[in-house]
Image 1 (cartoon, helix red, strand yellow):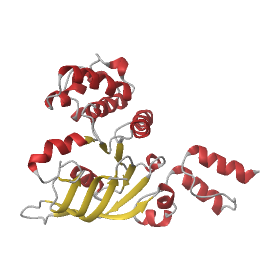
Image 2 (cartoon, rainbow, N blue to C red):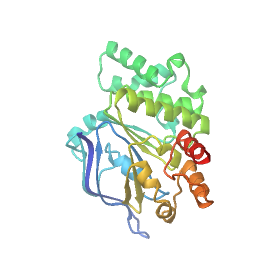
Image 3 (tube, rainbow, N blue to C red):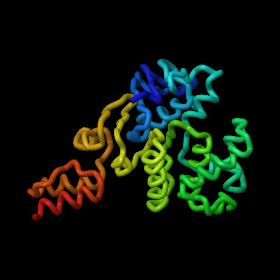
Amino acid sequence: MSTNIRTENLSFSYPGDEERQPTVALDGVTLEIERGSFVVVLGHNGSGKSTLAKTFNAVLLPSGGTVYVDGMDTSSEELLLEIRRRIGMVFQNPDNQIVANVVEEDVAFAPENLGVPTAEIRRRVDDALEAVGMTDFTLHAPHLLSGGQKQRIAIAGVLAMLPECIVLDEATAMLDPIGRREVLNVIEGLHREKDVTVVLITHHMNEAEHADRVIVMDHGKVAMDGTPKAVFSRAEELKALGLTVPDTVALLRELKAGGMDVPVDALTVEECADAILNAMK
């Protein structure tokens, strides 16, 4: 499988001032994001996970090391537009990405600025809104939508650029459980049906249950990297990093500690229920 994003010894520091030294946010991060994969990046506040996300499409440029997008160095200014077309970003607050007063105009904004022909823009807008389940809201005012609907419009705006990869930086953090589920369903559908590479930055452990891979950041370094089941089996190490395990894993660990013969690596609610049912037979 080919690589969408590759970092080599990546470091980044936020500038200090007369009273403070620069703050190191990333410290020698080397990793690859494979094309078509679904990767979740976890970490406590200040771990470097959001900074890492912003280096993937040159919102932030490395202080040291290199970030490559399909082999293109993100520090090359002449490649910036192409890099940002290939790596779409969705941020925490959708209001910061919505720029128009009508949904379809907002989704059309990016391709218009890329010089896409009008007929092609129409097709892309329609396809993007269909992909996020917002076709019925084409002529609505974005500011009247719910938080989850706004975030789906933000995702549609990124999809209209036809990116190879979508990076979502805490995109569900401001949403209620219903809105979060709406957005996750869209993300999982895009990955499954359109083979879009997804990098999801989050602090919600349960959002990792359908991922191919989980990367755990700590103090600017990669602390863990593996399948969700492999990472969440290391519950004590996660606890030491200020993180928890998904609710399903926590429940199974409690049951096992109480004497029930259950596996402790069932992530989804369905897997967890099946594990408990089998143990009770």
